Amino acid sequence: MKKILIQTLIDIIYYLILCMATFLMLRMILGYASFDSKYEFLSQKQSYLHIKTWLYSFYIHVFFSLFTLIAGFTQFSSFILAHYKKLHKLLGKVYVIAVLFINVPSAFVMAIYASGLMPSKIAFIILDSLWFLFTYKAYQTAINKDFKSHKEYMIRSYALTFSAITLRTWRIVLSALFVITPLHLYMIDAWMGFVPNLLMAEFIIRRRLY
Image 1: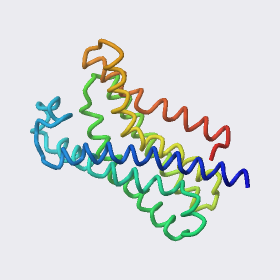
Image 2: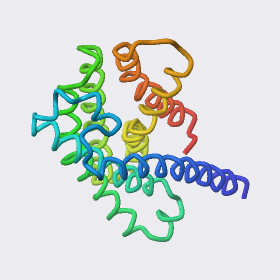
Image 3: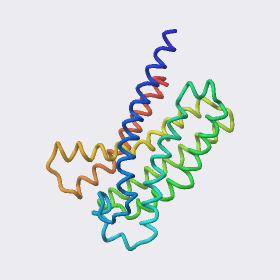
Image 4: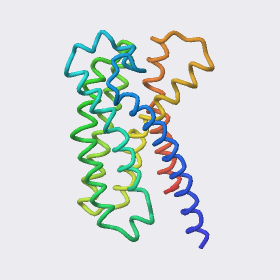
């Protein structure tokens, strides 16, 4: 009974975080849906707007990020897993396809053109490579019915998916706490957006908090 209550509490906390993250992402995406070339992040990328590969990759990445966040989060719902296994598997496949064939390729293009010079480019390339690896391993272990490893790799994969939120959160926090140039802020933020997420994922896995 105690274990069920703890798991229910964890699920509630996770859902509250997702609701907040979804709201923030939806708010951002609605702004980009206007295709205003000077909205938010695009205002800093005026010199890249003529590069169609970058521009298309940017919009693909932005519009699919919310979809991937929600599809991936459902994989951790004990209720869906217990009562709707077919839905769990379907959404899992959707998540894998979205990450491997849509989000990672588009993010990789953006990584090549990332601001913040080489430190930022390296950070985003590492993020994208690990995102692909962990998601693929999550799929592979599910196929092999190694469900313990499957869940652990999904935690790692989703930690990187959630960097869509933490990247923007750290940017706000760092700019509020420190006087820092935009260039250096972007360099630091590129690493802060996903490294703490991976550390938290490993903490959850090692402590069996799932």
